[in-house]
Image 1 (cartoon, rainbow, N blue to C red):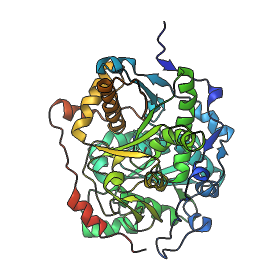
Image 2 (image 1 turned 90 degrees about the vertical axis):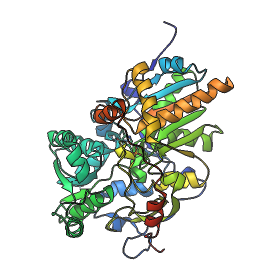
Image 3 (image 1 turned 45 degrees about the vertical axis):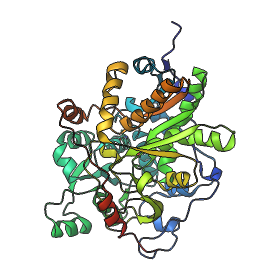
Image 4 (image 1 turned 120 degrees about the vertical axis):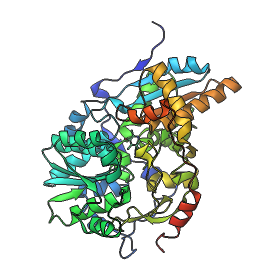
Length: 453
Ligand SMILES: *Cc1c(COP(=O)(O)O)cnc(C)c1O
Protein backbone atom coordinates (compact mmCIF):
# COMPACT_ATOMS: atom_id res chain seq x y z
CA UNK A 1 0.00 0.00 0.00
CA UNK A 2 2.68 2.51 -0.91
CA UNK A 3 0.85 4.42 -3.60
CA UNK A 4 -1.77 6.84 -2.31
CA UNK A 5 -4.46 7.65 -4.87
CA UNK A 6 -7.06 9.74 -2.96
CA UNK A 7 -6.10 12.73 -0.84
CA UNK A 8 -8.98 13.32 1.53
CA UNK A 9 -9.73 16.04 4.05
CA UNK A 10 -12.24 16.02 6.92
CA UNK A 11 -15.28 18.26 7.34
CA UNK A 12 -13.23 20.44 9.66
CA UNK A 13 -10.99 21.27 6.69
CA UNK A 14 -13.82 22.90 4.73
CA UNK A 15 -12.49 26.43 4.20
CA UNK A 16 -13.69 29.02 6.71
CA UNK A 17 -13.59 31.87 4.24
CA UNK A 18 -13.80 32.56 0.54
CA UNK A 19 -10.69 34.02 -0.97
CA UNK A 20 -10.89 37.41 -2.69
CA UNK A 21 -8.07 38.08 -5.16
CA UNK A 22 -9.07 41.72 -5.86
CA UNK A 23 -6.74 43.33 -3.27
CA UNK A 24 -3.80 41.36 -4.74
CA UNK A 25 -4.34 42.40 -8.37
CA UNK A 26 -1.46 44.44 -9.83
CA UNK A 27 -4.10 46.75 -11.38
CA UNK A 28 -7.64 47.21 -10.03
CA UNK A 29 -10.64 46.01 -12.05
CA UNK A 30 -12.17 48.60 -14.43
CA UNK A 31 -15.53 50.07 -13.31
CA UNK A 32 -18.85 48.37 -14.19
CA UNK A 33 -21.14 50.60 -16.29
CA UNK A 34 -24.91 51.15 -16.33
CA UNK A 35 -26.50 49.64 -19.49
CA UNK A 36 -28.60 52.78 -20.10
CA UNK A 37 -26.38 55.70 -19.07
CA UNK A 38 -22.95 54.07 -19.63
CA UNK A 39 -21.87 55.68 -16.33
CA UNK A 40 -20.12 53.75 -13.53
CA UNK A 41 -22.67 52.06 -11.31
CA UNK A 42 -22.78 51.77 -7.55
CA UNK A 43 -24.36 49.33 -5.09
CA UNK A 44 -27.77 51.08 -5.29
CA UNK A 45 -28.00 50.40 -9.06
CA UNK A 46 -27.51 46.69 -8.47
CA UNK A 47 -29.94 46.44 -5.54
CA UNK A 48 -32.99 45.44 -7.66
CA UNK A 49 -30.96 42.47 -8.94
CA UNK A 50 -28.88 41.18 -6.03
CA UNK A 51 -29.02 41.20 -2.21
CA UNK A 52 -26.74 43.77 -0.56
CA UNK A 53 -24.41 41.14 0.96
CA UNK A 54 -23.57 39.80 -2.50
CA UNK A 55 -23.16 43.31 -3.92
CA UNK A 56 -20.69 44.11 -1.14
CA UNK A 57 -18.82 40.87 -1.88
CA UNK A 58 -18.72 41.86 -5.56
CA UNK A 59 -16.73 45.03 -4.81
CA UNK A 60 -14.98 43.93 -1.60
CA UNK A 61 -11.29 44.68 -1.13
CA UNK A 62 -11.00 42.30 1.86
CA UNK A 63 -8.66 39.37 1.24
CA UNK A 64 -11.07 36.88 2.80
CA UNK A 65 -14.83 36.78 3.38
CA UNK A 66 -15.95 34.49 6.24
CA UNK A 67 -18.30 31.66 5.17
CA UNK A 68 -21.42 31.63 7.42
CA UNK A 69 -21.72 28.43 9.51
CA UNK A 70 -25.09 27.59 7.96
CA UNK A 71 -23.46 27.47 4.52
CA UNK A 72 -20.48 25.41 5.78
CA UNK A 73 -23.03 22.98 7.22
CA UNK A 74 -24.63 22.53 3.80
CA UNK A 75 -21.21 22.30 2.11
CA UNK A 76 -20.68 19.19 4.31
CA UNK A 77 -23.11 17.30 2.06
CA UNK A 78 -20.34 17.01 -0.55
CA UNK A 79 -17.28 18.94 0.67
CA UNK A 80 -14.37 18.55 1.02
CA UNK A 81 -14.26 16.98 -2.41
CA UNK A 82 -11.53 14.44 -3.20
CA UNK A 83 -8.22 15.22 -4.83
CA UNK A 84 -7.10 12.23 -6.87
CA UNK A 85 -3.79 11.23 -8.37
CA UNK A 86 -4.59 9.86 -11.84
CA UNK A 87 -2.04 7.06 -11.64
CA UNK A 88 -3.78 4.81 -14.14
CA UNK A 89 -4.04 7.64 -16.69
CA UNK A 90 -0.33 8.40 -16.16
CA UNK A 91 0.51 4.76 -16.91
CA UNK A 92 -1.65 4.71 -20.03
CA UNK A 93 0.10 7.85 -21.28
CA UNK A 94 3.48 6.45 -20.27
CA UNK A 95 4.38 9.86 -18.87
CA UNK A 96 6.75 10.79 -16.06
CA UNK A 97 4.35 13.66 -15.21
CA UNK A 98 2.28 13.42 -12.02
CA UNK A 99 -1.36 14.15 -12.83
CA UNK A 100 -3.80 15.22 -10.10
CA UNK A 101 -7.45 16.15 -10.41
CA UNK A 102 -9.87 17.83 -8.04
CA UNK A 103 -13.25 16.12 -8.43
CA UNK A 104 -16.31 18.36 -8.06
CA UNK A 105 -18.65 15.79 -9.63
CA UNK A 106 -19.47 14.41 -6.16
CA UNK A 107 -21.85 17.31 -5.43
CA UNK A 108 -25.59 16.51 -5.56
CA UNK A 109 -25.94 18.57 -8.75
CA UNK A 110 -22.98 16.77 -10.32
CA UNK A 111 -20.83 19.87 -10.77
CA UNK A 112 -19.10 22.74 -8.96
CA UNK A 113 -22.10 25.08 -9.40
CA UNK A 114 -23.69 24.21 -6.05
CA UNK A 115 -20.71 25.90 -4.32
CA UNK A 116 -22.15 29.29 -5.28
CA UNK A 117 -25.85 28.39 -5.58
CA UNK A 118 -26.03 27.74 -1.82
CA UNK A 119 -24.56 31.07 -0.65
CA UNK A 120 -26.60 32.96 -3.27
CA UNK A 121 -29.85 31.41 -2.03
CA UNK A 122 -28.77 31.97 1.60
CA UNK A 123 -28.13 35.72 1.25
CA UNK A 124 -31.35 36.22 -0.72
CA UNK A 125 -33.32 34.35 1.94
CA UNK A 126 -31.72 36.56 4.60
CA UNK A 127 -32.94 39.61 2.70
CA UNK A 128 -36.49 38.21 2.72
CA UNK A 129 -36.79 37.19 -0.92
CA UNK A 130 -39.63 34.87 -1.88
CA UNK A 131 -37.68 33.37 -4.74
CA UNK A 132 -34.97 33.67 -7.41
CA UNK A 133 -35.02 33.94 -11.19
CA UNK A 134 -32.21 32.69 -13.36
CA UNK A 135 -31.30 31.36 -16.79
CA UNK A 136 -29.75 28.06 -17.71
CA UNK A 137 -28.20 26.82 -20.94
CA UNK A 138 -27.39 23.15 -20.69
CA UNK A 139 -29.14 22.87 -17.33
CA UNK A 140 -26.32 22.48 -14.76
CA UNK A 141 -26.84 25.91 -13.26
CA UNK A 142 -30.64 25.60 -13.16
CA UNK A 143 -30.23 22.28 -11.36
CA UNK A 144 -27.81 23.68 -8.79
CA UNK A 145 -29.94 26.74 -8.04
CA UNK A 146 -33.13 24.67 -7.77
CA UNK A 147 -31.44 22.44 -5.15
CA UNK A 148 -30.21 25.48 -3.21
CA UNK A 149 -33.64 27.16 -3.32
CA UNK A 150 -35.28 23.94 -2.10
CA UNK A 151 -32.91 23.94 0.88
CA UNK A 152 -34.02 27.45 1.86
CA UNK A 153 -37.72 26.96 0.98
CA UNK A 154 -37.57 29.52 -1.82
CA UNK A 155 -39.21 29.56 -5.24
CA UNK A 156 -36.93 29.19 -8.26
CA UNK A 157 -37.88 30.31 -11.79
CA UNK A 158 -35.53 29.00 -14.46
CA UNK A 159 -35.48 30.39 -18.03
CA UNK A 160 -33.96 27.55 -20.02
CA UNK A 161 -32.63 28.12 -23.54
CA UNK A 162 -35.39 26.67 -25.74
CA UNK A 163 -33.18 24.48 -27.89
CA UNK A 164 -31.70 22.74 -24.81
CA UNK A 165 -35.16 22.43 -23.29
CA UNK A 166 -36.29 20.59 -26.41
CA UNK A 167 -33.14 18.51 -26.86
CA UNK A 168 -32.63 17.67 -23.18
CA UNK A 169 -36.06 17.14 -21.63
CA UNK A 170 -34.47 15.07 -18.82
CA UNK A 171 -32.59 18.16 -17.64
CA UNK A 172 -35.81 20.15 -17.31
CA UNK A 173 -37.36 17.21 -15.43
CA UNK A 174 -34.38 17.15 -13.08
CA UNK A 175 -34.82 20.84 -12.30
CA UNK A 176 -38.56 20.39 -11.70
CA UNK A 177 -37.86 17.45 -9.42
CA UNK A 178 -36.16 19.88 -7.05
CA UNK A 179 -39.26 22.08 -7.10
CA UNK A 180 -38.36 24.83 -9.57
CA UNK A 181 -40.47 26.17 -12.44
CA UNK A 182 -38.79 25.81 -15.86
CA UNK A 183 -39.71 27.93 -18.89
CA UNK A 184 -38.43 27.42 -22.44
CA UNK A 185 -36.87 30.79 -23.40
CA UNK A 186 -37.79 32.93 -25.31
CA UNK A 187 -41.17 32.94 -23.49
CA UNK A 188 -44.18 35.21 -23.76
CA UNK A 189 -43.80 36.01 -20.03
CA UNK A 190 -41.45 38.99 -20.54
CA UNK A 191 -41.08 41.95 -22.89
CA UNK A 192 -37.63 40.70 -23.86
CA UNK A 193 -39.03 37.28 -24.78
CA UNK A 194 -42.09 38.66 -26.59
CA UNK A 195 -39.84 40.97 -28.63
CA UNK A 196 -37.69 38.08 -29.82
CA UNK A 197 -40.75 35.91 -30.59
CA UNK A 198 -42.33 38.71 -32.63
CA UNK A 199 -39.25 38.80 -34.84
CA UNK A 200 -38.70 35.05 -34.95
CA UNK A 201 -41.45 32.77 -33.58
CA UNK A 202 -39.09 29.77 -33.99
CA UNK A 203 -36.14 31.32 -32.16
CA UNK A 204 -34.04 28.54 -30.56
CA UNK A 205 -33.12 30.99 -27.79
CA UNK A 206 -29.67 31.77 -26.42
CA UNK A 207 -28.05 32.35 -23.07
CA UNK A 208 -28.07 36.10 -23.73
CA UNK A 209 -31.86 36.07 -24.34
CA UNK A 210 -32.54 33.89 -21.29
CA UNK A 211 -30.49 36.24 -19.08
CA UNK A 212 -32.55 39.20 -20.34
CA UNK A 213 -35.78 37.37 -19.46
CA UNK A 214 -34.62 36.31 -15.99
CA UNK A 215 -33.36 39.82 -15.19
CA UNK A 216 -36.63 41.38 -16.37
CA UNK A 217 -38.69 38.89 -14.36
CA UNK A 218 -36.76 39.83 -11.22
CA UNK A 219 -36.79 43.62 -11.59
CA UNK A 220 -40.53 43.70 -12.43
CA UNK A 221 -41.54 41.40 -9.54
CA UNK A 222 -42.27 44.20 -7.09
CA UNK A 223 -39.41 43.12 -4.82
CA UNK A 224 -40.48 39.48 -4.46
CA UNK A 225 -37.70 37.95 -6.56
CA UNK A 226 -34.09 38.71 -7.23
CA UNK A 227 -31.84 37.43 -9.98
CA UNK A 228 -29.06 34.93 -9.68
CA UNK A 229 -26.13 34.31 -12.03
CA UNK A 230 -24.10 31.09 -11.99
CA UNK A 231 -20.77 32.39 -13.29
CA UNK A 232 -18.87 35.49 -14.52
CA UNK A 233 -19.37 37.77 -11.47
CA UNK A 234 -16.65 38.36 -8.87
CA UNK A 235 -18.72 36.97 -5.99
CA UNK A 236 -19.45 33.78 -7.93
CA UNK A 237 -15.76 33.16 -8.65
CA UNK A 238 -15.00 33.92 -5.00
CA UNK A 239 -17.49 31.31 -3.74
CA UNK A 240 -15.76 28.75 -5.95
CA UNK A 241 -12.37 29.33 -4.30
CA UNK A 242 -13.27 26.60 -1.79
CA UNK A 243 -12.09 24.26 -4.58
CA UNK A 244 -8.56 25.66 -4.84
CA UNK A 245 -8.17 26.23 -1.10
CA UNK A 246 -8.91 22.56 -0.45
CA UNK A 247 -6.63 21.55 -3.33
CA UNK A 248 -3.74 23.53 -1.81
CA UNK A 249 -4.07 21.52 1.43
CA UNK A 250 -4.47 18.25 -0.47
CA UNK A 251 -1.37 18.86 -2.59
CA UNK A 252 0.45 19.36 0.69
CA UNK A 253 -0.83 15.94 1.82
CA UNK A 254 0.52 14.55 -1.44
CA UNK A 255 3.86 16.19 -0.71
CA UNK A 256 3.92 17.98 -4.06
CA UNK A 257 3.17 21.42 -5.52
CA UNK A 258 1.72 21.90 -9.02
CA UNK A 259 3.90 23.23 -11.83
CA UNK A 260 0.75 23.67 -13.92
CA UNK A 261 -2.91 24.27 -12.88
CA UNK A 262 -5.52 23.79 -15.63
CA UNK A 263 -9.26 24.50 -15.80
CA UNK A 264 -11.90 24.86 -18.51
CA UNK A 265 -13.55 28.25 -18.99
CA UNK A 266 -17.11 29.15 -19.95
CA UNK A 267 -17.85 32.14 -17.75
CA UNK A 268 -14.77 31.49 -15.64
CA UNK A 269 -16.09 30.18 -12.32
CA UNK A 270 -14.70 26.64 -12.03
CA UNK A 271 -11.40 27.87 -13.47
CA UNK A 272 -11.35 30.76 -10.98
CA UNK A 273 -12.29 28.34 -8.22
CA UNK A 274 -9.27 26.11 -8.69
CA UNK A 275 -6.86 28.75 -10.00
CA UNK A 276 -7.32 31.85 -7.81
CA UNK A 277 -5.78 30.37 -4.63
CA UNK A 278 -2.74 29.26 -6.67
CA UNK A 279 -2.61 32.65 -8.44
CA UNK A 280 -2.51 34.26 -5.00
CA UNK A 281 0.48 32.04 -4.12
CA UNK A 282 2.15 33.19 -7.36
CA UNK A 283 1.46 36.87 -6.65
CA UNK A 284 2.27 36.93 -2.93
CA UNK A 285 4.47 33.92 -2.07
CA UNK A 286 6.90 33.88 -5.00
CA UNK A 287 5.45 30.67 -6.42
CA UNK A 288 5.74 30.13 -10.15
CA UNK A 289 2.90 27.85 -11.24
CA UNK A 290 1.69 28.10 -14.85
CA UNK A 291 -2.08 28.72 -14.82
CA UNK A 292 -3.86 27.60 -18.00
CA UNK A 293 -7.47 28.32 -19.02
CA UNK A 294 -8.93 26.09 -21.75
CA UNK A 295 -11.86 27.10 -23.96
CA UNK A 296 -13.66 25.65 -27.02
CA UNK A 297 -12.20 26.65 -30.40
CA UNK A 298 -15.79 27.40 -31.52
CA UNK A 299 -16.39 29.94 -28.70
CA UNK A 300 -12.92 31.37 -28.11
CA UNK A 301 -13.59 34.47 -26.00
CA UNK A 302 -10.10 34.72 -24.43
CA UNK A 303 -7.95 33.59 -27.35
CA UNK A 304 -9.89 35.34 -30.16
CA UNK A 305 -12.17 37.87 -28.47
CA UNK A 306 -11.27 41.46 -27.74
CA UNK A 307 -10.84 43.04 -24.30
CA UNK A 308 -13.43 45.78 -24.24
CA UNK A 309 -16.71 46.93 -22.72
CA UNK A 310 -19.73 44.84 -23.74
CA UNK A 311 -23.20 43.86 -22.59
CA UNK A 312 -23.63 40.65 -20.63
CA UNK A 313 -26.99 39.90 -22.32
CA UNK A 314 -28.89 40.33 -25.57
CA UNK A 315 -31.54 42.89 -24.53
CA UNK A 316 -29.06 45.27 -22.82
CA UNK A 317 -30.60 44.89 -19.36
CA UNK A 318 -27.49 43.58 -17.59
CA UNK A 319 -24.59 45.91 -16.71
CA UNK A 320 -21.81 46.64 -19.21
CA UNK A 321 -18.48 45.17 -18.13
CA UNK A 322 -14.96 45.18 -19.49
CA UNK A 323 -14.16 41.65 -20.57
CA UNK A 324 -12.86 39.48 -23.38
CA UNK A 325 -15.88 39.18 -25.64
CA UNK A 326 -16.98 37.83 -29.01
CA UNK A 327 -19.84 40.38 -29.03
CA UNK A 328 -23.13 40.02 -27.15
CA UNK A 329 -24.99 39.19 -30.38
CA UNK A 330 -22.71 36.22 -31.11
CA UNK A 331 -24.54 32.89 -30.86
CA UNK A 332 -21.93 30.12 -30.52
CA UNK A 333 -22.21 26.81 -32.44
CA UNK A 334 -24.13 24.06 -30.65
CA UNK A 335 -21.20 22.12 -29.22
CA UNK A 336 -21.83 19.46 -26.59
CA UNK A 337 -19.98 21.44 -23.93
CA UNK A 338 -23.05 23.65 -23.45
CA UNK A 339 -21.60 25.15 -20.27
CA UNK A 340 -18.85 26.83 -22.30
CA UNK A 341 -21.12 28.63 -24.79
CA UNK A 342 -21.03 32.21 -23.54
CA UNK A 343 -19.97 35.22 -25.61
CA UNK A 344 -18.01 36.87 -22.81
CA UNK A 345 -15.65 36.03 -19.96
CA UNK A 346 -15.54 36.93 -16.28
CA UNK A 347 -14.07 40.45 -15.93
CA UNK A 348 -11.69 39.09 -13.29
CA UNK A 349 -10.37 36.31 -15.55
CA UNK A 350 -10.16 38.78 -18.47
CA UNK A 351 -8.05 41.15 -16.36
CA UNK A 352 -5.74 38.32 -15.25
CA UNK A 353 -5.27 37.30 -18.90
CA UNK A 354 -4.74 40.90 -20.01
CA UNK A 355 -2.13 41.35 -17.27
CA UNK A 356 -0.26 38.21 -18.36
CA UNK A 357 -0.95 36.33 -15.11
CA UNK A 358 -2.70 33.38 -16.80
CA UNK A 359 -2.39 31.61 -20.17
CA UNK A 360 -5.21 30.47 -22.43
CA UNK A 361 -5.63 27.91 -25.18
CA UNK A 362 -8.50 26.67 -27.33
CA UNK A 363 -9.43 23.04 -28.04
CA UNK A 364 -11.60 21.59 -30.81
CA UNK A 365 -14.57 19.39 -29.98
CA UNK A 366 -13.24 16.48 -32.07
CA UNK A 367 -10.06 16.42 -29.98
CA UNK A 368 -11.89 16.15 -26.66
CA UNK A 369 -13.56 12.81 -26.61
CA UNK A 370 -10.50 10.69 -27.30
CA UNK A 371 -9.05 12.00 -24.01
CA UNK A 372 -12.40 11.72 -22.24
CA UNK A 373 -12.74 8.05 -23.23
CA UNK A 374 -9.18 7.28 -22.14
CA UNK A 375 -9.98 8.90 -18.80
CA UNK A 376 -13.22 6.94 -18.43
CA UNK A 377 -11.46 3.68 -19.24
CA UNK A 378 -8.49 4.27 -16.92
CA UNK A 379 -9.87 6.31 -13.99
CA UNK A 380 -13.47 5.12 -14.29
CA UNK A 381 -15.14 8.54 -14.15
CA UNK A 382 -16.97 9.81 -17.23
CA UNK A 383 -16.03 13.49 -17.46
CA UNK A 384 -18.50 16.14 -18.60
CA UNK A 385 -17.59 17.59 -22.03
CA UNK A 386 -16.70 20.94 -20.38
CA UNK A 387 -13.88 19.73 -18.09
CA UNK A 388 -12.80 17.40 -20.91
CA UNK A 389 -11.26 20.61 -22.33
CA UNK A 390 -9.05 20.86 -19.24
CA UNK A 391 -8.37 17.13 -19.44
CA UNK A 392 -7.29 17.42 -23.10
CA UNK A 393 -4.82 20.19 -22.21
CA UNK A 394 -3.58 18.11 -19.25
CA UNK A 395 -2.97 15.11 -21.50
CA UNK A 396 -1.11 17.31 -23.98
CA UNK A 397 1.15 18.65 -21.21
CA UNK A 398 1.75 15.11 -19.92
CA UNK A 399 2.70 13.96 -23.43
CA UNK A 400 5.17 16.85 -23.68
CA UNK A 401 6.71 15.52 -20.46
CA UNK A 402 7.02 12.10 -22.08
CA UNK A 403 9.05 13.74 -24.87
CA UNK A 404 11.22 15.82 -22.56
CA UNK A 405 11.48 13.36 -19.68
CA UNK A 406 10.39 16.08 -17.23
CA UNK A 407 8.47 15.01 -14.13
CA UNK A 408 6.05 17.93 -13.97
CA UNK A 409 3.19 18.04 -11.48
CA UNK A 410 -0.09 18.90 -13.22
CA UNK A 411 -3.39 19.64 -11.44
CA UNK A 412 -6.67 20.00 -13.30
CA UNK A 413 -10.22 20.67 -12.19
CA UNK A 414 -12.66 17.90 -13.06
CA UNK A 415 -15.58 20.16 -12.32
CA UNK A 416 -18.42 17.77 -13.20
CA UNK A 417 -19.35 14.27 -14.30
CA UNK A 418 -20.82 13.47 -17.71
CA UNK A 419 -23.79 11.31 -16.73
CA UNK A 420 -26.16 13.84 -18.27
CA UNK A 421 -24.06 14.08 -21.43
CA UNK A 422 -24.21 10.51 -22.65
CA UNK A 423 -25.83 11.55 -25.93
CA UNK A 424 -22.59 13.42 -26.69
CA UNK A 425 -20.61 10.25 -25.98
CA UNK A 426 -23.09 8.33 -28.10
CA UNK A 427 -22.45 10.70 -31.04
CA UNK A 428 -18.71 10.29 -30.65
CA UNK A 429 -18.85 6.51 -30.34
CA UNK A 430 -21.06 6.16 -33.39
CA UNK A 431 -18.86 8.48 -35.45
CA UNK A 432 -21.43 11.26 -35.71
CA UNK A 433 -19.69 13.95 -33.74
CA UNK A 434 -19.68 17.21 -35.67
CA UNK A 435 -16.78 19.57 -35.51
CA UNK A 436 -17.10 23.33 -35.80
CA UNK A 437 -14.47 25.57 -37.21
CA UNK A 438 -13.61 28.85 -35.57
CA UNK A 439 -16.56 31.02 -36.71
CA UNK A 440 -14.41 34.01 -37.70
CA UNK A 441 -17.03 35.78 -39.85
CA UNK A 442 -19.83 35.52 -37.31
CA UNK A 443 -17.57 36.86 -34.59
CA UNK A 444 -16.43 39.76 -36.75
CA UNK A 445 -20.08 40.57 -37.46
CA UNK A 446 -20.95 40.46 -33.76
CA UNK A 447 -18.06 42.74 -32.84
CA UNK A 448 -19.72 45.51 -34.91
CA UNK A 449 -22.47 45.66 -32.27
CA UNK A 450 -20.31 46.51 -29.27
CA UNK A 451 -21.51 49.50 -27.24
CA UNK A 452 -19.65 52.75 -27.94
CA UNK A 453 -17.99 53.68 -24.64
C1 LIG B 1 -21.32 25.53 -16.01
C2 LIG B 1 -20.25 24.57 -16.19
C3 LIG B 1 -19.02 24.96 -16.75
C4 LIG B 1 -18.73 26.33 -17.27
O1 LIG B 1 -18.89 27.38 -16.38
P1 LIG B 1 -17.72 28.11 -15.65
O2 LIG B 1 -18.37 29.23 -14.97
O3 LIG B 1 -16.71 28.54 -16.66
O4 LIG B 1 -17.16 27.13 -14.70
C5 LIG B 1 -18.04 24.01 -16.90
N1 LIG B 1 -18.22 22.75 -16.50
C6 LIG B 1 -19.39 22.33 -15.94
C7 LIG B 1 -19.52 20.89 -15.55
C8 LIG B 1 -20.42 23.23 -15.77
O5 LIG B 1 -21.56 22.82 -15.20
